[in-house]
Length: 212
Figure 1 (cartoon, rainbow, N blue to C red):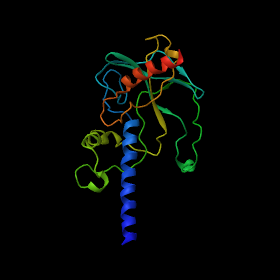
Figure 2 (cartoon, rainbow, N blue to C red):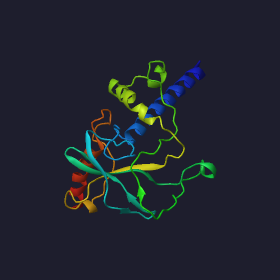
Figure 3 (cartoon, rainbow, N blue to C red):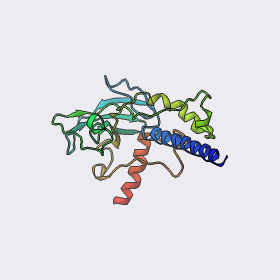
Figure 4 (cartoon, helix red, strand yellow):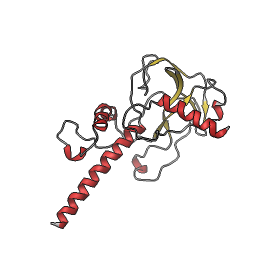
């Protein structure tokens, strides 16, 4: 009986880890995704109400090659987004199960205007038939899962990419010298209230104060 109890506890622990990992993946992939109409052929852009979406006029130089992102407005913030930026070679073929390998370089400007696929994962059923996985999730998290799981349908082993957001260059003093990171407020990211543009603005103000 004790052995059966330990197995049940282990399964419950694995289920909880699955849910935690999924929630973390959801948060990292953005709190929402909308199809922009301002840029032909672009993928979804996270944020609130978007308008005036254009390709950036500037190129960002990296040690791997130049990048061109998109500029969009989530009132009242103008944000420059770089979606699907590779940070390692695709972990497929001979690179499967190997440590990350530096991505290949490129010379021509690389247009980074769409999300890359998410890494393969088993998503929980949210129709009530998978109660063991969902456990006692708060109602807000359950609603968030129901809203965001459809955005994780596009999966692939080729998934080592970053989505980067920065205040549009020239919109405030010192933009070029201020680092931007992704993070949450003191609470968790249970409610989809932290838009990418809003995070960018809040963190810019905080980091600006640290670097001045």
